[in-house]
Length: 130
Image 1 (cartoon, one colour):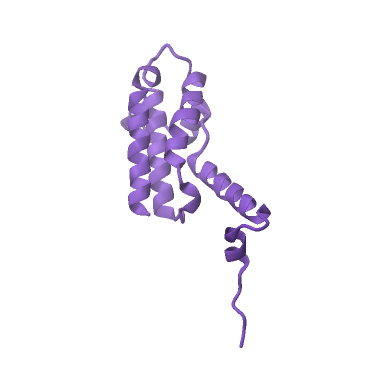
Image 2 (cartoon, helix red, strand yellow):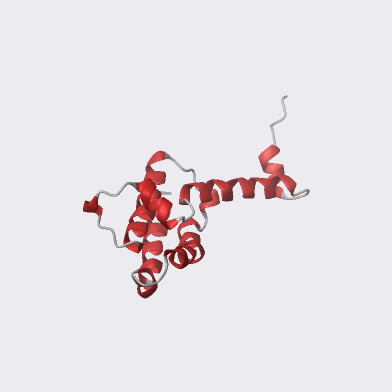
């Protein structure tokens, strides 16, 4: 799973840099940059996340890469030591960890509502005794 998360982060950065003209433009309003991030980059970061077992290490890697992208959107260097809460307050982007948790719950709901699907049968199966 570590390789999958690393690949998602790499692809997220590739998508970010493919939108470099918009993301690094000082004249473009931050709301438009945030919408671009939420619609173009966040889905790349979270693709297939419903099957991930999220632990602290992978959560930190995803959150760190998101904060780095947000700093880059605002043209803030890491050495300026601006707090994460202030950056998130300015960008108002969707948190990648919360998005992953919502997507996982959404998949669980779909699995629960499926009547004759094998995924529900396997989830609720228990072995017989005897």
